[in-house]
Length: 197
Picture 1 (cartoon, rainbow, N blue to C red):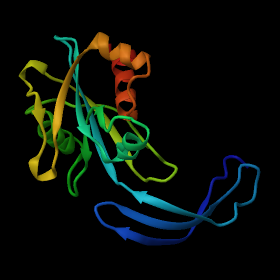
Picture 2: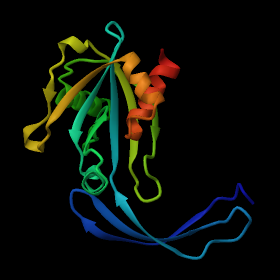
Picture 3: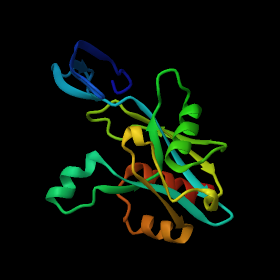
């Protein structure tokens, strides 16, 4: 039956244990039509949980995004002439012992120079559930874009960040014409333009 959803995890082995983790899973699950799948072997990229923060300035009608070189885009940048510098909201991993709101405050300060803000929860989502356990917790915060720097980032993390202060009209136009290529940017701007404003 469709509502009889069960999973059996036969084995979980750590294949790589560095900055990120890779586990090899052997599992099976019930089928919608009844019965069970055969045993399935999958590698799982252990990314953990992160926060994403969309910064926006209602008075100036601007969104504040960050631009930086991203490792995940390097292959496409080299072989398909895509850009490795991506435009996205502030984001970062939730450190051990840290709450989501504490992570929002830390990342907003480190990546955009935001010293004080109130964070509004939007949603949480899996960006790539086919092979990663990462969950993104999306928030938004209203800021004064004029008070923010042009560049930010933590030197010890080799972060080189440019703040992109974009008019609402420009950002909405780029969104509508599929000019953004980062899922969190698209989801955050859809919330801003179609739910918040």
